[in-house]
Image 1 (cartoon, one colour):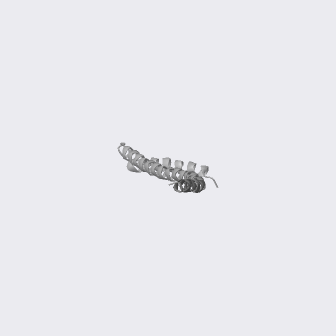
Image 2 (image 1 turned 60 degrees about the vertical axis):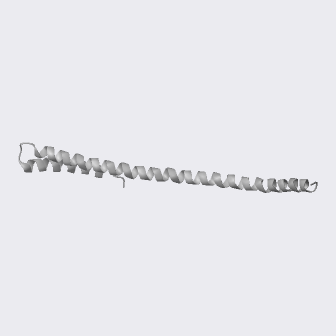
Image 3 (image 1 turned 135 degrees about the horizontal axis):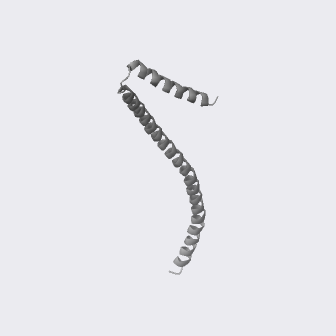
Length: 103
């Protein structure tokens, strides 16, 4: 019985000596992983929500253009005049966007 007590103490010292660097290494790995995966998660969320927003905006823009064309077609004017007006409006918008583009 007297021999078993020092062995347990020696075993706990060995366990403590092994646990300390292991804990330090695991904490370092967790910190690096959290820092790295945290940035990747933010990037992926930004990309996903950005694509979602672009899809919603493109859909709403298409629906808005269709509604404008439908409303203009209800005017009591000749159809060629309506198409001329829409062509001028969209041509002007395209020219403004083309002029604002960066080279």
